[in-house]
Length: 110
Length: 118
View 1 (cartoon, rainbow over the protein chains, first blue to last red):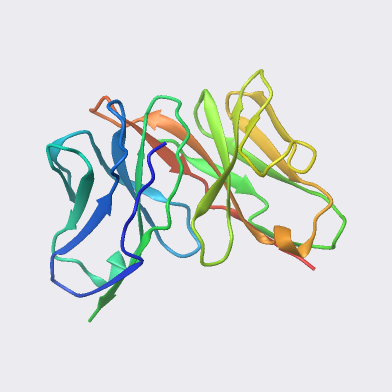
View 2: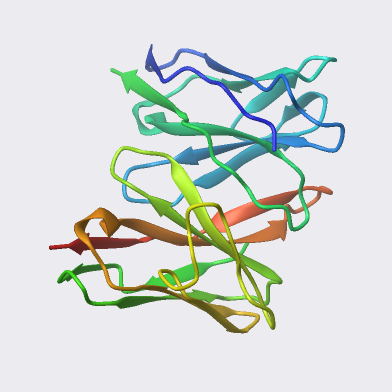
């Protein structure tokens, strides 16, 4: 399973766009990139998943360059409620175990 | 999306005792996963549990310490045996399902069981 590296923490203000970049230099051909969000005292929650280029859903966008050695989670116009830990994961899907890295603690300030 | 419940939500236990954590899913799933999350830390995978077969444990985790049952496709238990204060942690179960409208799979997590060992 590919190892991921992401910033330990980030600060932002309400209304700003937040971009969290994750490095995964050893990503394998059949690996997907998945991001999870975790609030205190809750289990992680799936945000977005992609394989290449750009993926967008109602809460975030995921940008993946052609070499797939990194990815960027983009949260548009964050609010205080987006304060959480964000995990970048790389691995197969369909029965493959999910290994969590250290995650990025995002603090959104008023 | 799968809805997962865990019992108990929290417990305080004495050293040397055992606690069994239950995980119930509202749909049938092939694989269930058990994680541990120590305060302020990331999640660590303990084992993967398939119905009808023995669980597969990750490095550093053994069946004698963390026996797992998976009697059917909607239920699993994790037992933390002969507990010590180092076992104080949040234990989470999760399942994997296909994300709606995509070819991808996503994991759904239970609310966790907060265990304190005195």
